[in-house]
Length: 205
Image (cartoon, rainbow, N blue to C red):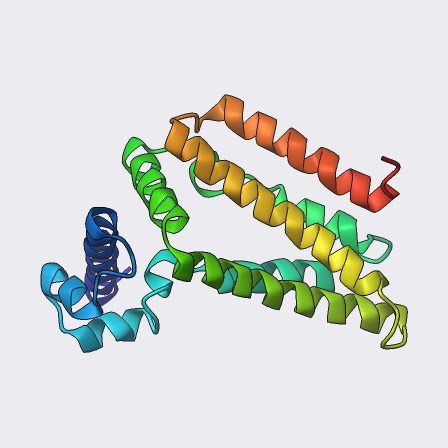
C-alpha cells in the first residue's frame, strides 16, 4: 500500500472514531456532520466524500457485504441449493469472530449501544435488509421461473436474510456483554448452521 492510500485509510479511520465517540456521548441524531468533521480535523465535504450519508459512518460496508452474499448465491456451483450457498458464505468466520481485538471489541460494543438508541440507524438496518431480501427473492424467482403470485421466493429470501440479521444482532449483544471470543464464535456458528439447515430441509416445528 502506497503512502497516499495509507493516508486516506488513516483519515477514514479518524473520521469513524470521531463519529463513534460523539454518537456515544450524545446519540446519533443529536450530532451534526459538521461537528464530526471538526473533531476529525477535516472538512464536512471530506466526511461526505468517504461516507455519503451519516448512517454510513456506522453501516459502512453493509451494502458491500450484502452484494457479496448475493453474488455467492448467484455464482454457486452446479447442484448447490440457494440455502446451502447462503449458508456457506454466511458461516465463514470473519472480522472480530476470527481474531478478536480488545480495542475493536470495545468499539463494536459502543456502536451496538448507539444503534439500539437510534431510530434512524435501526431504520437504515431494516432498509438494507429489505433490499437484500428483495434482491435474493428476485434471483430465486428467476431461477424457479415462477409467476408474480408465487410466494416461495419471498418466503425463502425472508427466512435466509432473517438468519443473517439474527446472527448480526447476536454479535452486537455479545460485544456489549463482553462475550466475544472463540467460545462465542463456535456457539454462533452452530446456531447459524442449525437455523439454515432447518430452512434448507423445511421447518417441521
